[in-house]
Length: 281
Image (cartoon, rainbow, N blue to C red; front, side, top):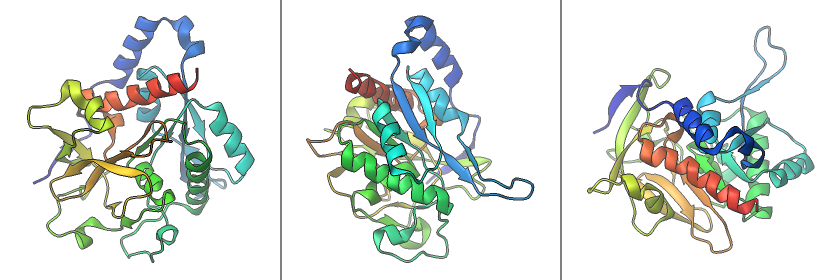
């Protein structure tokens, strides 16, 4: 059974970043991999007559803590601008938010579905499609909705509302998820890239406790993806590339940027940055 805890849990990402900088030396900043990150979008409201693009600091701090430099990309409709940005990056982090439009995978929206603002939904889908189609060797990490986006772009589908569509599910999202997160165990499958990343901190049971902020999950897997972690109710908690022509491609359903399980969570960002460093050589 899932439990709830406050956002205060975890270790300081800033402390990790400061340690990384002190070990590598500030002069090395010129050679750190550039990690591109898509951004949240808030539509115009009240006195704000223009939309706002933004990103939570935890993402940028985690990238810096892993030795990378975050480069943010606001929503955009220009395909060539997207191409130039992707090409200039050494690796890409796709973050989530609200839900992918179900029409992208041939379904109508359920009442519980919370579709992304149109500006961002359109941009994110075009960006991810261009990235996965034209840059197969570019290292990519998808978090929560970012993993779901990867799955849909590769032809997969989603379960739109876990409580209504999965029998006896765990609690995957707290009732007040702005103040609390749900927590449950996941099982990381052997012979996966994720298992290798988690190996140093892997408990004897093979299970990790993660936070959980989602009401949707993967259903049919996209092309070239395989499952690398599951929760006890069968929800897919992580996927990765099963395609030899792709480079580092990994998606997780939880939010590792909060560093609730530091060995596993920071390992994800370090692995992305390491793969980006190799791809940039």
